[in-house]
Image 1 (cartoon, rainbow, N blue to C red):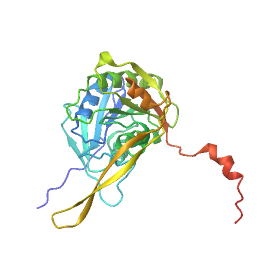
Image 2: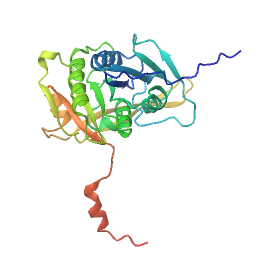
Image 3: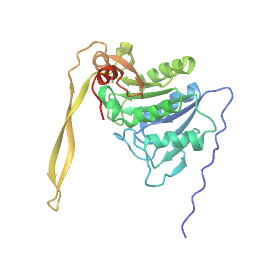
Image 4: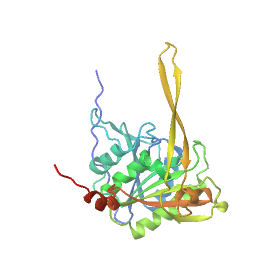
Length: 271
């Protein structure tokens, strides 16, 4: 006999005197970076976790539409109300808002990602797409990333930075339709230069595909590549990170190239 899963209910009762903070990521619900972020957010308010049940790096703003989503209560984060989801980071945010919480949270934080999400990485990042979904929902949202891919990375500096930035956003909010992309250099606290609000560097990945043969002689490919930054501006996130600063880039999800509208309107569009 197949064991029936219990129906997920809106079980979270929002405290009146503490902000509700939704915590998610793309590295998975057991990620050390998520654990560190939950600890910090519980100092600032009432954290609620809804995160993928497995790593979802590079998923961008993908959503699940051709298969069902599963949502299970877990106890990976002590007394913090926590769920794991079989879907993408964006799925996690949608389910959290619609099925777990009985109101929009006061803040959404995503991360702490193991690895950089600066520059062009923002469009591929599941971490940042979760934060972007929060902003679409009208929730002040922040994505945090540490420039260290190791699971045992020291989170001391990242936790301090996350607390400073999150507490400011809880107090002052964000402009409408805006979220923050925060990248943190892998430095001890006493070597950190400070925090810089900056722009996204114009950079890209030059992809390469390592072609191999499986045991049956069939070709397969591993994506590799090199990050190329030709933007030498001292107001960019890449410059800030290379020089020991935390980079904070305000991001919006309106992709309209406003500067091109006049140019295109001057063309002849006879149909």
